[in-house]
Image (cartoon, rainbow, N blue to C red; front, top):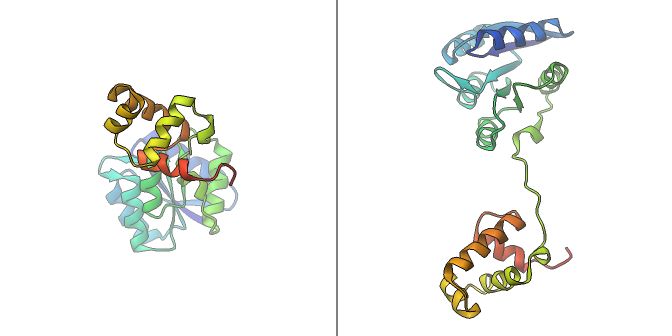
Length: 201
């Protein structure tokens, strides 16, 4: 039997999750909490196997609570529930040692299965990683953007590129924005590295 702690500051959410867990075979809610402080006190007494933690709390956030609870019991597995699909929240949860990051509108069966999986030592690592934007190879860029990228790869500044191509510096900046969006990168250095990669890896 997996012992579960449910932490959420909204009564309806907390009760709904707790009722769902209690109704599932092999799972039992041993504690409920509305605040991070309550969760820490009750976890110390009940020693749950899994904690389901709301991301936004009155006295903290899910990752902070996860880190604190795991400091008390490193074997505790945390599932962070969030109302918003936020890559920053995912990253913070992963850094805190959470085993899964799920959205509050997750299907009931999926939440139960997630509790069972993380409780048996199988973290849902994919849920903690940001969704990677689709990327395209440099060859997919329009001709002018490929020219700009080639000059970036040579280490030229925006001003030097503008002079080389006979265009305004603002035009170069606009091309760079389009290049980075197409390649799925966030800096000119990353774009230059993509340009330097072999065409067929």
